[in-house]
Length: 113
Ligand code: 5GP
Image 1 (cartoon, rainbow, N blue to C red):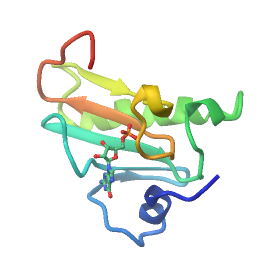
Image 2: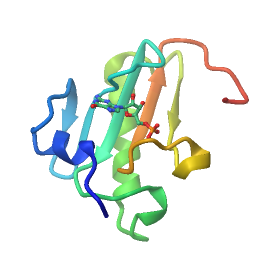
Image 3: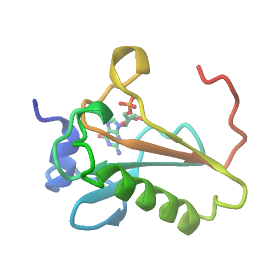
């Protein structure tokens, strides 16, 4: 897959407001936040979107565990929050590197736009 700016963030070539890092994942604040808390959780590996995750790799389990831990650490667990994965053009994906949005700190509406 073609590299995206998130690969450069992983390598530290583009700065980010990092909130969490481990061997396989990185989380940082969204540059254009859509909620008081808006954090992106990404795999360090270049993976284009959620459909490209290897079956039974455990990667999504890990990313979800990281996201829920961050939500607890950010103090948005009790009030609730939303996790979003956009996939492709109709899904609204603008960066072709898998990421989970953590959105919290305000009331979300349904259906989403
Ligand atoms: P998508 O639309 O692909 O689901 O989400 C991509 C997200 O990445 C958007 O919410 C956008 O604001 C965020 N984003 C794009 N470029 C950067 C950047 O350089 N730094 C950070 N921290 N977030 C970015």
